[in-house]
Length: 256
Image (cartoon, rainbow, N blue to C red; front, side, top):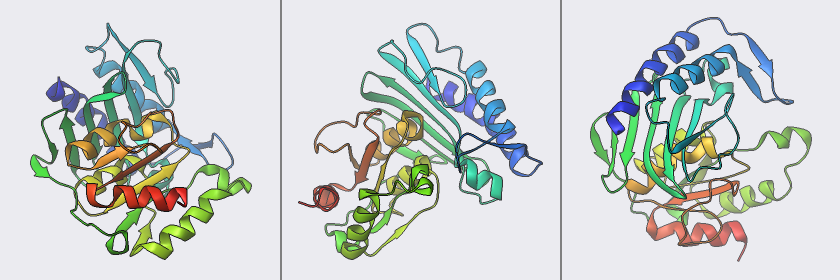
């Protein structure tokens, strides 16, 4: 199935790349939450090309499909993760597809056609970037770690609250923070060891479904607020890090 999903994502990626280099019609879903015609069109291509899955699988997609499915098995689609980057010509944007059986990820593909990076993973089969095996970092102290995160759109409406307090603690206890604007790619860059840890709040399931599978298969511990448990895609929090620092990061975030 992974090869068929990859074929569908590559086809949709051609349209994303066309849009990245073309004229965009931009509208607002919130105060600073952007959407373009390419978000909708790329999602339409994906839903069509992935229709072979169907049957026992439900579809959960950002722009058109339901926010949840009653089916145990689900396909989570983000047609353009990093739409603000896409609009501004910053090449950190991607297509993300995750296939799940309950809370367990079966397949994950994240594709950035602008930078020609295709990450993929299958449960039990490892994680790959453009066909080459990738692994997470082996850091054992948070102070040595470069950390990725993102900020929810609510910050623009004065709803930063604890998120900014946690950011301050992370900055005080690590080598630094990078905020690149795509949860899916942040997870993948953690999977390949560029980032040593990644955390973020207020995410939707399609933001993280594909990348979480890839990070886990690259050796990361991926969880919600409870260490040792697979993340609930609807918890609105995720932490991915090497085994040596995951617990320390969780303690910093919880302020234990």
